[in-house]
Amino acid sequence: MSESPRITVIMGIYNCADTLIEALESLEAQTYKRFKVVLCDDGSKDNTLEVAQKWAETHPNYIVIQNEYNMGLNATLNHCLEYVDTEFVARMDGDDRSLPHRFEQEVKFLDEHPEYAIISGPMYYFDEQGVFMSGKGSGVVTKRDFIAGTPFCHAPCMIRREAYKAVKGYSVDKKLLRMEDYHLWFKMYAAGYRGYMLEEPIYEMRDDRNATVRRNWMTRKNEAYVRYVGYKMLNLPWWAYIYCLRPLVLAVIPACLYNYLHKRKR
Image (cartoon, rainbow, N blue to C red; front, side, top):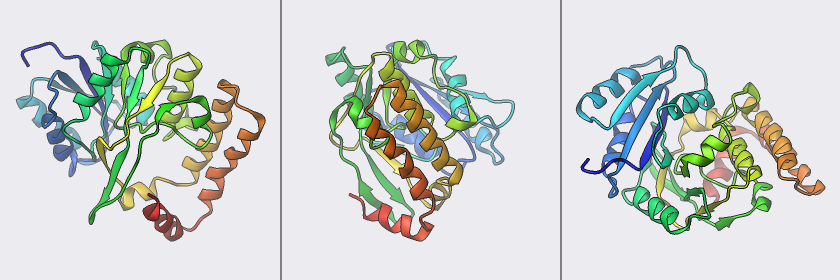
């Protein structure tokens, strides 16, 4: 890179050896090139770490670190944040793909809108048969948007480093596992930071059978907990707390029905 990076991409990687190269190639295809990447292996049981290290040998703007044992995504991303010294922090997962214009659009938005600290965009959802659903962005995200669910897509987000520092990164607690992003947004909004969702997709999320399996009872229970504490952080109205029950209802829906409804959602 001829100019110093403005973005650090933080990636927690775990058992994604088969998809990691595709994810990293999507970063190399970005039209905006001023970025570096921190990959943290979270105790993978396959050869994810070896794949990442081999890639970094030929790509000097990538560094690879590892946890001593499997710690979960929130602790893993905090480990990555220790290596961030750039203006912006972007997320990326090891089994997804960033569309080529993603970074260019996000940096342009943050440069033109200093009043916002968080920028993200909707995603295309794909499985082994291809894209089956696309999201739509809503523009300015208000506190009321937190009631229905997490208002930002985590993996495609870009955040000002100062916002991460102000809330001391991701909170680490077993009650927050797989809900670390929703809790992060609550903390940032409680601290006075605001964000925006672009209208059109900038990212492709792999949403296959493995992703469905991860939506288990523990995840749903954690979501109910995060909703409860988050609504309190933002002083949301009393009726909002009814939505704490939503993830618990989804937890008892048969997997086949959930998959059907999920893939029909537009």
